[in-house]
Image (cartoon, rainbow, N blue to C red; front, side, top):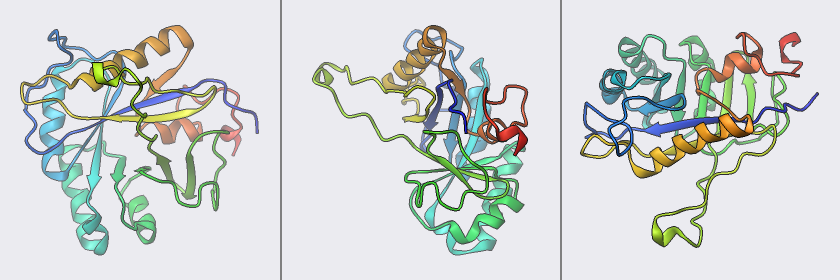
Length: 237
């Protein structure tokens, strides 16, 4: 399979309970985002998040953070997904921290979930229905469902004591899902989010890195969108 030459970055931002309803981007009150952003929130917060970030110009993606306890019951999991979709009808992705959701993959597909963001990709490369581009930490364990691994947090650099941490690295042709925190109590996006978004925008303009969303990843991997991965044989799969 030919290697994908375009490195791809997904910027995700987790939103905690208590976050304000009117966020502003950056420390200068900017009202637009330089790159697409995937916002991850609980069922209770996802509707408020969707309304809040509507004031920020840019491409937004909303993902449901599914608690581990939800996978103990198919009925509870189905109910959570239904509640989230009432707030965000276009919901196509969920994030899972720990927990065993393997037995619920068919249910996720039935409920329209196409992408699952996980901390660690168990059995990476095994039982993949469709091939993934070389170097991409994702696989397709069931038809219609992709599991994607979150990139590990960058280790603090020697200048971290001055508030300058090491910048993330994106390998040639690779995929990196980079996460950060939500906005702070004043409605300003946190410092790391500001730096990450600015860095991703600079990489896109100078180095040809493409920034996309988590939910849009499935269509790109299967070649269903107009910007399918160049050089990939997945369109014919």
